[in-house]
Image 1 (cartoon, rainbow, N blue to C red):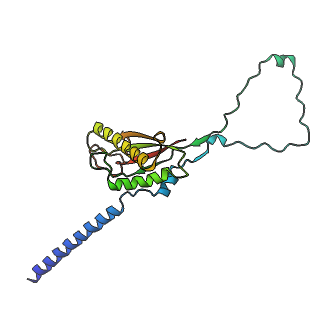
Image 2 (spheres, rainbow, N blue to C red; image 1 turned 90 degrees about the vertical axis):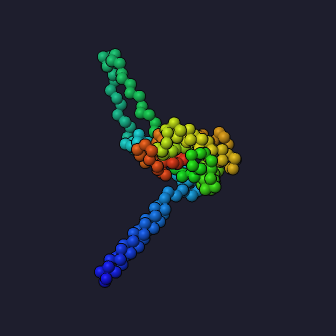
Image 3 (cartoon, one colour; image 1 turned 120 degrees about the vertical axis):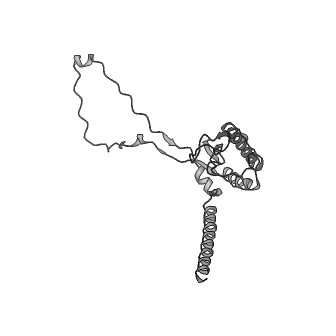
Length: 215
């Protein structure tokens, strides 16, 4: 009898422990879910940055002029004058190496459609504030819709185009952003952040990417 009671207590304890693990794991998963950046973070990610290209390496400034005159070159002989001189073009001037800043957003659409949910609108409100800020108001942007690999690739391509267009329309209507500043494209499942096999759900790959196209 005592043994049976002890076994029951052990079983109950194991069940309680398993339930605790499930709850804890679920909470951790939710806490680790992708969170969208704030307006300030979006501005920082999307504002253009550039640096001099590597062609500037090894370039040394000219030294100070000396008071002593440079020695005169000897007179060229007739034979030397008859030899054609080779001409080496100067190296190209350094040009700025401008990257294309971008940011990824998790936009909550209705399942299988391009309808924006209230949560999606809240996300796009943050994006709209960033795109109309003084730091970004003069730049043009590409809105690229992406999907995961669940479903038919052709259907995913169409859905990504529709969702990118929905984001563009919302930003233009809500924030008065000019149509010429935004370009909507659909990427379907062709450019995943996390490569997965076909028919694999991935929240990270269901995204909207904002790319700075310059002025």
